[in-house]
Image 1 (tube, chains in turn yellow, red):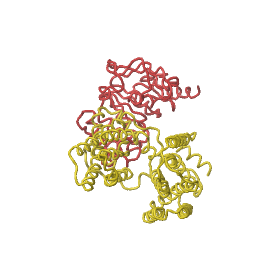
Image 2: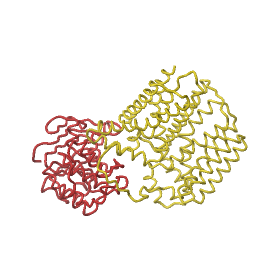
Image 3: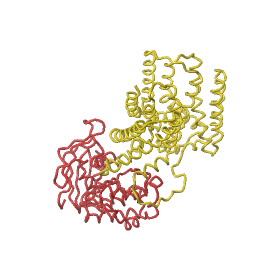
Image 4: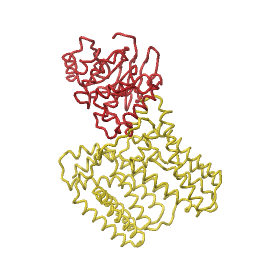
Length: 379
Length: 237
């Protein structure tokens, strides 16, 4: 088990575990910065537990369903191994990677921004660990075709944490979920974590047009995570106007436009596919042929999300004006053009999992620029 | 080397991490038009590095000069790109295109009409896969897709990195015939570990060692025994 953990850890966290060090350093800097700034807000403990649980679960799910390191896993699965030992090594390393590189900075932010007792902090960490195990167990259940049980488990966990809110109740739920997940994982087949790419009969596409827009649409539809992210943004777009009712004195419409530009997956096409990036550099005339099509595609997706936002705004406030609609268009276009330029000139390299790609600091550059514009307009 | 000079590269150095650790150093090469040249060398010699540099993919390089059709050029010049096509050793690009869609897209990129590939798809036994997405193809079929595209475009310069890898026996034989017959259209430079492929098809064979071309074999000198001896000597150094 030790050798498997070591091999997997080096694969995900770096040969010298440098990514763990970098993440720890980032978390410390974030904590000190917020603590020094004296930012203090009141956060209910159940929010901390829910965030720890579902944020971690989301990242863990992304890592489990990612394709990036499947080729390297092939080599590990080829070797002889003890099934139970491999399952727990695999889940532990993925869980540690998730907690250290993704959840830790979020904890640093929350722990610095509010005052917590030692028990609350420990319970938040337990919720994170529970989320890793439960997500792996849920993944296995879905792999076997049983989608209702993990869904029921998720809803129950969320409902109990949100409604009970007592430390002991949350502790009991987290511990029970954690132990249940461990028990379930004790009996799974390690090979179920390996996904062959050839899982179904190839579909024939009769068309002859080499249209990049078609390519990008297939890309979006084939990657469910990317599609779910866009759908999620549409849902957020529906709720934003309702949230903005809390700020009646500020013109929040452009802020919403800027927030909705956080659609990372579709703007990391070249980063996520190094072979495609290589082909784009090698083939002639791709700045025009690929670049503009990519801009058009991101713009089209942005406008779909923006349409949901506009409709929700109209329902909530009953009115809007041409300048707001123009702003929607302008922000969507800016986001598309800047995303493609950034992706073309500075693609993200050396990422290990899809969640590394999605959470790269580069993703905040364009939203920050748009938020700055929106803030200037709002003020 | 007969024929008009097509490509000339003088004193090329290529590095990945630091200038003082180059993979290629003092690398010089001349290609004539309408010839087939093979590039051989041990693993890690720099064959793929050279091809990726010519493809314009690697930023860390320096050279005294390079000419294309006797005019100075850089690897990312549009004119040069329009006259060369590269088949990489490992390539899984355009996963969501079928072969036909890829061919249409690439033909438009090279500003040429859609070529007739019936002979090529038949020769590579690829006809059943032309409407399948690249992501659903095996390694060998994917290699065939890129090779068919390469020979259909007929650019002045074809760079093939380990083209034999992944191909079945019949496709390999067909590829040898295509490489040998390409001289009427342009020049091919291909890297290979299969000595037979070099001996059967090449006008010249270049041995890459210690970052540069260490030996050149032409015509009658290209024999399996000669090449094996040179490579064995390189291994023993």
